[in-house]
Image (cartoon, rainbow, N blue to C red; front, top):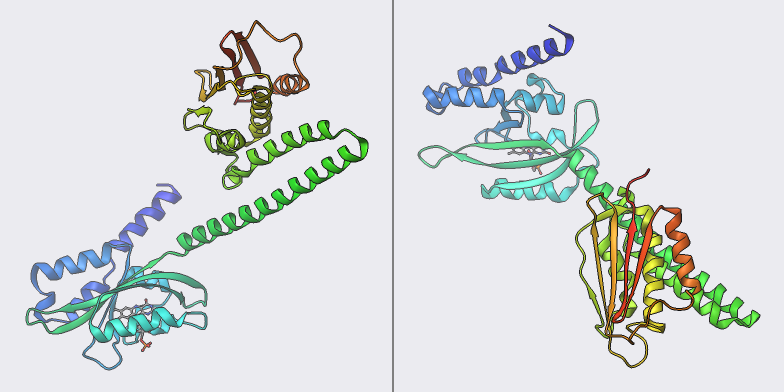
Length: 357
Ligand SMILES: Cc1cc2nc3c(=O)[nH]c(=O)nc-3n(C[C@H](O)[C@H](O)[C@H](O)COP(=O)(O)O)c2cc1C
């Protein structure tokens, strides 16, 4: 038998041979613990991993009269250090008053109560105790015990705390990022004005703003390394949604965080083009359909389909600066863009590989 197996078998043997329920039963030869129910009590108490104790309300200061092995393991005390004491010996300087008050009140009213409070082990270390306590009556409705079950929820609390901290950090980061984008915008505007290139500055600014919106939705999820692409696409195209000439489809899809700036810039260029020359230009009431999904190969496909704009007569003579930015960006990630200049409008299919290599 290897070390691990021996450990496990001696552990389960010692659990089986927890004799404290048996001794308790022998010390309480009243009818509650005789016969089948007594045996059941004995076995259940010995086997459960949940800490359990019984306290006697008919003795002064509600002393513990029984605590199972799990209770002893949780608190680090031996049986003789537990039995005869009120459970408050588990409390310490940092235990909050409110749950203790609630327990005192519940006990006085013979109510059931569930509280979460900080308790102390024998070695001084602390744990968060999810405690359930309630009265037990005999056949004549006489209160004979209080039952308590203790569960260490320290890990759950730590996870909750971590989550809260992460949310706070995301909020702070979002705030700083907005500030940063505002500052960059300001710099671009002022430089544009001073150098007499306001139009170019405005164009650059629009790209920066689209990037900002793309990042904005991702902050909550950024720590996991992947993000939902749908909310990001919605945020990028938010300014174009006002007159309902955009139809967004798309599926629930998680993508690596690293592609978000590319998606932001690509959609911005397509939207800017649609406003200048395509479905959203002039008085024509054209529409754009945006769809996104994963290909069989696991690539991200983004479809951009314009209809109802000015009639097209083949590809334009010259693609603008935006298009060349877009092409260059895609090349860096082995992505592609396929443009079809249909008479009814531009139909683009963008492919972005999601896996490396
Ligand atoms: C069955 C039972 C189990 C209890 N278990 C705990 C426990 O695990 N931790 C704790 O801090 N208090 C526990 N208490 C509560 C304390 O014993 C005590 O009732 C509480 O501190 C309020 O009373 P006090 O203000 O007189 O201290 C338990 C009470 C009962 C009746």
